[in-house]
Amino acid sequence: MAPASRARLSVDLDALAHNFHAIAAEAEGAEVAPVLKADGYGLGAGPVARRLRREGARTFFVARLAEGEALRAELGQGEAQIMVLDGFTPGAGERLAASGLTPVLNGVGQVSAAVAFAASARAPLPCALQIDTGMNRQGLTLEQAAALAQAPDRLRGLDIGLVLSHLGSATQPGHPRNAEQLAAFRRVRDLFPEARASLSSSAGAFLGANYRFDMVRPGISLFGGGPEERPDPRLRAVATLAAPILDIRRLAPGDPVGYGVSIRAEHATRVAVVGAGYADGVIRAARRSGKAWAAGAHRRIYIVDMDLTVVEIGDADLHPGDMVELLGPHALLDDLAAAAGSIAHECLVRLSPRAERLYVERALAPI
Ligand SMILES: *Cc1c(COP(=O)(O)O)cnc(C)c1O
Image (cartoon, rainbow, N blue to C red; front, side, top):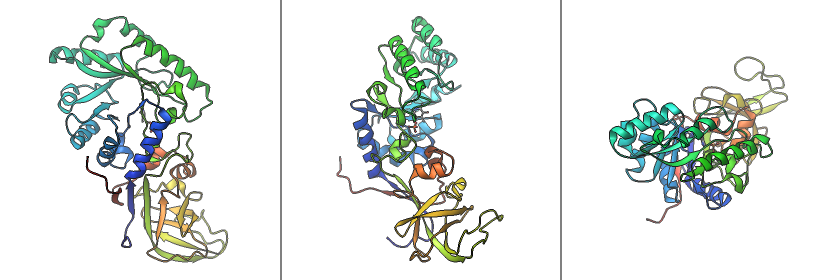
């Protein structure tokens, strides 16, 4: 490949496919329904969804109505079910119908709005129902769900194909809240025995058979984020952000680097000035402790500015024009997130369009 003159974000669609099947193996028979909100976790919902579709995905989730419309345009009418987590927001009925999107109803107000819409459209409205089993964020309470289940009139015209809930502590397998939410979700499933059931996102999909139900909804693990917020050997890195070395400089002990004087060389060393910064999606909070990868070793990140990242390279044989991996198969997403005091999800969605984008996949046989 020709040397890059600017930062490059490559998205490895084969690694994505690998992760999809790794999760499917873990989920043993449950449907794997990718969550592609925020433009496919920043990596491009269109190319990501098309590849996952080829790998067998039949249902996708997005957060916003507009994300659903964009994904429908990418996939085409009739191709796969697209569920909108925001649900039946005011005025959404016509747009949901026009793009063939399935709302995830989150509250009694949404349920009544959907019932009214179905009555005026004189057609059953496919939808899902989200129940809050203990995260206290989104969804009907258990009591509201039970009241609805006993009053079929209040659900008239709704074709509830799925009931779902979301785990708040699944990245900690031993946390007691997991078992509490599981018990609550079993009650939900019994209230709506005709509907399929889904409790787990990425982390939950790895919690064992009890948590799988009919469908798991992974997002981050499709892109290589480990279910316990640390690198997991079963998953491969999908996003690689690399940028060229623009310059190499020598530092004497105590030399300050960049803005302010709080970050200083601890010893005589060399640093590489790399052509990507937080405007490209390198998390600024990863300065001081984050690790990049170059010339076969991890390299400490000194500072992250808008356009530049300074990385300690010691006496490594590196030159201007050589590429430094700021995120990828060596500078792992979960490690970067930990260094930045964040989570893998945020590190991915912050990747910006400034870096040149490249989708990488081996040639696929036509289907
Ligand atoms: C974002 C989200 C997911 C996916 O979560 P990951 O941790 O990325 O796997 C699943 N379900 C719901 C309701 C979500 O909001």
